Amino acid sequence: LSGDRITALFLSPHFDDVALSCGGTVVQAAASGRATVATIFGGQPAGGLNAFAEFQHDRWGALGNAVDLRREEDLAALRALGASPSWLDFPDAIYRDDLYLSDDELFGPVKSGDVETSKSVCQAIAHLIDTSGSEVVYAPLGVGGHVDHLLTRDAAVNARHAGVELLLYEDLPYAAAEGAVGRWRARLPLRLSPLLVDVTAEIDARIRAIAAYRSQLPTIFRHHGHWESVVRAYASDLSGASDRYCEHVWRVVGERS
Ligand SMILES: [Zn+2]
Image 1 (tube, rainbow, N blue to C red):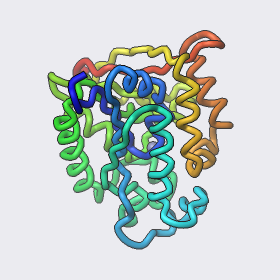
Image 2 (image 1 turned 180 degrees about the vertical axis):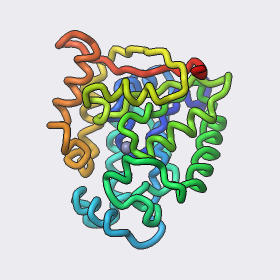
Image 3 (image 1 turned 180 degrees about the horizontal axis):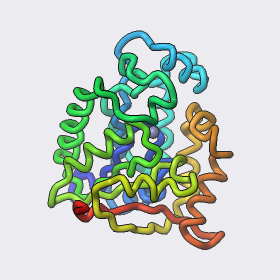
């Protein structure tokens, strides 16, 4: 190990996405070096909340400051994974003026009013990758199409260079919907090579980490079933055995012609 160098950098659009999607891979990276989980849209709302943001806060049971609460949850989750947090100040889509006012809009096209945010996220992620010194970077595949996931993924894809290996993780719980990974993967103009990571030894730590995001789980999993069953079933299906668990990541190997 060389001093403060980060050995694996995980880009999480929101607090919870990395633990949910590839927490076992984080535990392994942390065990063999230093893992950082950077939450891109971890900022405070700039002003008052629109009605949709108020509605989300209600669903989360967030009585006071929702971002402070979510940062507390993130600290506990990353302790369980052995990783350190880094919080970028971009506000979540629900806090960006009145751009996204419904679930349909959150999972629809990136709005033209988000151009400046998109540029700034690209710069920030490129800077983060360069200053981290990490040779391995994980970003979301963008399954489900949440606008913040797409912005994070596209920024990571733009920032990749010869010195960095970029791997895309399957966004849970959206990836648990039948056929979703294949559908979203097909939209990417990238050549991807699959990598199956055995996380049987790490699954319990991942479950403990996910459990820390208490305010989010009921909302995120409302269409999917009980969160722990969904996470375990997805990981054991990937392994092909009922007593083993895997995570699936996709290495970016080039452009698709
Ligand atoms: Zn998310």
